[in-house]
Amino acid sequence: MRPDRQPDPELREILRNIPAVSALLSDPRVVSAGHGLSQHVIVNVVRCEQDRLRSSILTGQDAGMSSVVDRIERELEMIGGRRGRLAINGTGVIVQTNLGRAPVSMSTSAAMANAASSYLALETELDTGERGGRGAEVESLMRALTGAERTLVVNNNAAAVLVTLAALATNRGVVVSRAEAVEIGGGFRVPDVLRQSGAHLVEVGTTNRTYVSDYESAIDAKTAALLRVHASNFAIIGFTAKPQLHELASLAQRQGIFLIEDVGSGCLLDTERYGLDHEPTLQESIAAGVDVVCASGDKLLGGPQAGLILGKASVVTRIARHPLARAVRADKTCLAGIAETLRHYARGDAPEALPVWWSISRSSHWLKDRCDRWAGALGERASVVETSAVVGGGSLPGKTLPSFSLVLSVGSGSADSLSRLLRIGTPHVIPRIVHGQVAIDARTVLQYQDDELLCAVRAALELT
Image 1 (cartoon, rainbow, N blue to C red):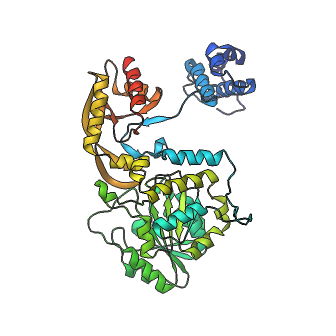
Image 2 (tube, rainbow, N blue to C red):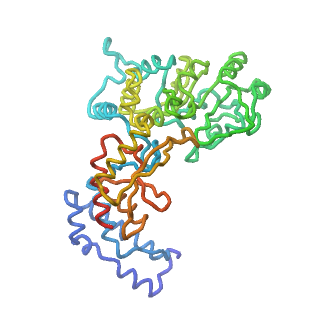
């Protein structure tokens, strides 16, 4: 409906039924939910809900008039911090994007909190009192772990790739295999990132087979770099071919151009030890002679969301001096979190301390025992089945980890209704539905969440 036209009589009658601000403000549930909040905040929430109702009515949508107080109550509880958002991940997806990917370790969380609540000698050399480099801790740790001469931390891996290309290849060509001109996720497309950076995409090879000679034939006076992109969230199998990384590094060195690699997950451990396919590691890329490697600080690294740019000092320094680098740089809490995460690798305790690796490294026997304990505590409405979990987050596509799940009888309701009760409970439990049954995968429930999980499941079962 055009805004300059008056609604018809029927619509006007419906609009008149929208509860008045005063009526909503005096509702006991609104009063309770708004406790401790300033009056103008409560009024604004109520008026926004009125506007939403009015807009829905005028556009012919279901306005949800009967649940207006429910929505206001939820909004006020969230604003006031009384509606928790912490969740138990029962989905069987370890790096679960919809649940904030993987949590960080306890010591990483503490390091980030300490950094947030205090001043830090972030860019101050304590010996001289003069301004110093940002991220020196991360740089030292990454040098010791991977051999990278310098490391720069930005806010995510997409930013890492963008600023790297902008700094090294604006108005010049970047050679990419057709098999790697991909969309990684969330609309992150390699050709689009190249375009935004100012670089020119030069595609070579075919979807399934690309050779060193393809790259070499495409290099000319306008070429700035070769770009290798790890296919994080899909796999091409069968009749395939691609050059070894050291072959591309040798070609780039001979031609006097850069070799850039987007390795994706930021892995530092050998995934084959845990029954998975090999995932490229940061130290392998550095050893192969890549000039600059871009990776995520979360995902398989197991830290807070960040983008890592590491490699040869002269190249990373050039990237750090680009104006975009300041626009996307990480803050002090992120730097503290990445540094503490890397210390787990330096100490050798990453498989136990970092939640993502703790989940990956659990044995089937351990998981079955855990599920059996849960089922024993819950009684006849719970059973245990063998299932499969995945790493997620675009890592190791198509590869599964054996797991076990707690399966709940839906009682008089349905799988959807029980699943909803678990999701809206306290804490929120996010299950999956497998063959019409509600299942909670033991591999993705964190080590300290057993008691919370059982309390939340009991509460949901009592309502069905």
